[in-house]
Length: 225
Image (cartoon, rainbow, N blue to C red; front, side, top):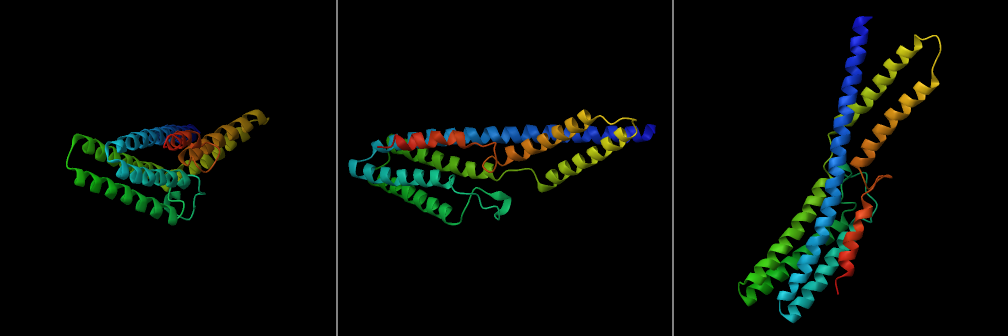
């Protein structure tokens, strides 16, 4: 019996350790996603303001294209996620990313051409740098949205949850009376923890969402005159 107790302790310890690391990692990635939304909104405002360095006609054209790019970015995250895509990626569809990429190229090529015609200057350097930062952050957002633990980690989590429940059941079966409070509390605690981890890893699918931070993008778009 002493050996069985040691095995039970090892299983529960492993389950607790894996749950702790999984929850910590999920919360960290959740916070990174929110931070990148805020960074993208700031980069949008900075790039839009620095377009004023260009000539009036070129400034107006590029501002229109940049507004279309930002609107396409906002629309992307309002689309339903396509669960058939690998990792439930943030592409959501095959058309929207292509539209965003085309608008990005138009903005970038337009800015480069405008700066080339006016000659190298500190203002153009600041503009190109801000646009590069804007597009880099968009790529980082796509990367963080697809960054999840390997599927085997989720399988292990749920497998250990079932194993822990089985061992707990055998342990309580030896008692003369069954404590339903302990049974329900154990089941709810384990199920809630696994649910929170899964929801936090995919914050645009369930009840735990990062959508509340999308208002920074819409506010940045609203300030574009």
